[in-house]
Length: 201
Image (cartoon, rainbow, N blue to C red; front, side, top):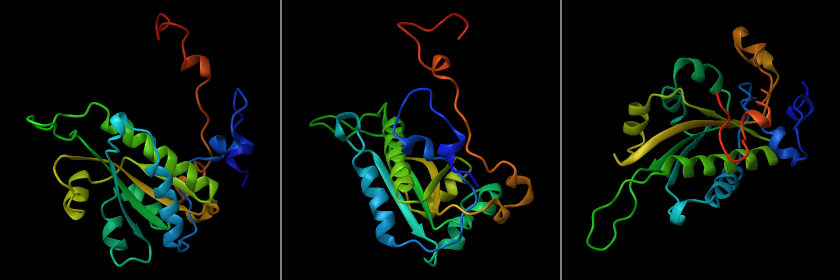
């Protein structure tokens, strides 16, 4: 199978890591050293955030952990069918509330999800640099995740993340095998505009 960096070509010269990173579903069901996962989470820890509040929180499990079967049940059936072969599962949360200032109640954060997304991006790039891939999943049972992981109510459940070493698509259900290719991106002129939005955008 060709690597993502061979399939996708950027419009401008960028670091190869950005096009090498993608979201496969075929993983090889191998074990992951806990220190490898800690390195990915450490990369996420250094993401930028508004006021340096670092609102993200990660709760993780390795496939060798006893909770693994229960964690797969927190994914929707479509995602559980392939994520079972990942090496680690991570759930990402963000704190909706900013710390209380003296004499005032906690205020809602406008950027908690944006900041958590920055942390996710750094995790995924670190995973790629280490020879893994990370696949973010919106298809999760949000309330089941909240209850099973004892998340406080003011934390927003963002995504689930499957991490592992890429395998051949033959491991996937037949319907997913032909979709196991790195996706392209819209051309830059459709995403970035000089001084204002174009008409009809």
